Amino acid sequence: MKTHPIKLQKPGKKTVKKNHLAWLIAKMASEDWNLNKDVIEMVGNRIIDNAGVAVAALNREAVKIARAQAMQFENRSGATLIGLNSKKKFDCQWAAWANAVAVRELDFHDNIMAKETCHPGDCIPTILAVAQQRNCNGKDLIKAIATSYETQLRLSMSIALNPNKIDHVGHLGPAITSGIGRLLKLDIETIYQAIQWSAHTSIFTRQGRKGNLSSWKAYAPGLVGKNAIDAIDRAIRGDKSPSPVWEGDYGIISILLEKENKNIKINLPEKNESRNGILGTFTKEHSAGYHGNALIDLAFKMRKKIKNIKQIKKINIYSKKYTHIVMGSGSNDNEKYSPKASRETLDHSAMYIFAVALEDGAWHHEKSYSKKRKNKLDTIKLWRKIKTFESKSWNKKYYDEPDPLKKAQGAKVEIELMNGLKIIDQLEFANAHPNGKTPFGRDEYINKMKILTKNIIHKQEENRFINLIGNLEKLKSNEIKTLNIVCKEKHLDFKKNNIKGIF
Image 1 (cartoon, rainbow, N blue to C red):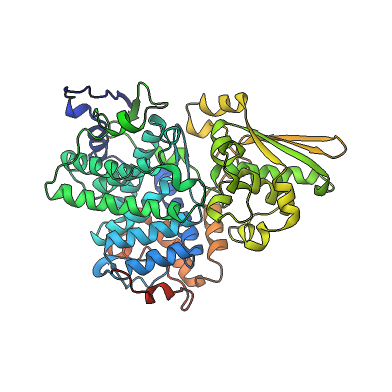
Image 2: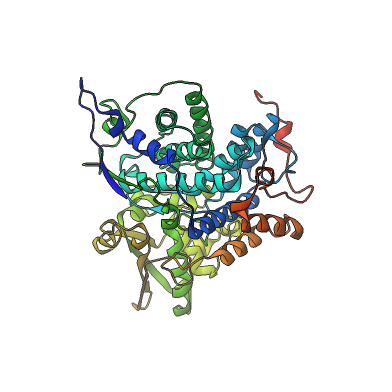
């Protein structure tokens, strides 16, 4: 691993191209390296994880709309759509769009925790779609996905987006593009140009995650995936990009990322060094914003000490700054306390998440957010007794720890009862985290998928898909074209296809 300082360009001056962040990433992506069993297994785990959460979301509104759009672009040499028969193929750009929306919709797959948080598994639908259309094999696919994860982890460890109110998909676009560059074995110059296009078109504000939310969170990864494919295509044809996109005096860093981005340095693997970044990421056991996963596990634990939840006077949650201002009362977002709020808001409300988990002792990706559940009067009363607080000690456990896997992501919770008794407990890591009580391995990923796809896919289809993943490194291009889950007939809702749009 080599450390590279990122120097900003001064007005009227030029910087050396080979020192540009985009060039450094492109160089890393262009170089081949040897796979190891840990990376192979983890890539397989994340494909399984994506498949489960995507199938569970197939009949949600955003996913139906994206699928209806994609189905207007049939291409016999294209890519598959999750849920549909794999013999049907669609243009890879649109397959990537629809499948990425399905994967992201439930906010239930993997994460990176560093200077920036994000969902690196969002790269998989786009890279897989291109792999299917371009006849790539299993080894090519694994290396491409691992390269994308590497890029996203390294960017996330180096450059903060959230403090500047920029959405985390700002790192996803370049990450996907680097992965496609590796997949197609492109040269440095081509990947360099494409990464800059992709970075330039992946910057959005975080208003999409605050206030009265739409399905923007679900659509964002699909949009940057489409942009990444478009960027690669243009670069292959010889097009140039805004340069230097990050370091320029009008560039992304100078104009948009002033806060918490002084003296930027990025660590990147050298030639022949394995791309192990994916091993520094982890998935969710519960369908909620990741900073709420440890809170759910902690609520399950603490409820055993409370005889009557109605006797709770107040609940204080002490955690790091990010949890407080993004998911907590420090966001100053009244929607996070409203039973009228959308799922997209409530899965990022620490107060709602803790209240429901404390009452139910269970968590479900649909039932825990249902209209009936969130309008329960006792829940609303409890919910509004909960506040979050930024804690110096939890900030230290998170922000001062350089290793993403050692950053404490949980909280300390103080429950005060009407009689004055206080129940206090804390949890640093969600149970499913690599440092948690019950870390996820292949069996847990498969079990999660089985729960999410129950009664939606046939057992034979489930086994076929899992067997493909078990042989992922050796899959031939024709087998990659079937790396898709097909649902039972009549499960999918195609009503959105009846609406005449532009396409």
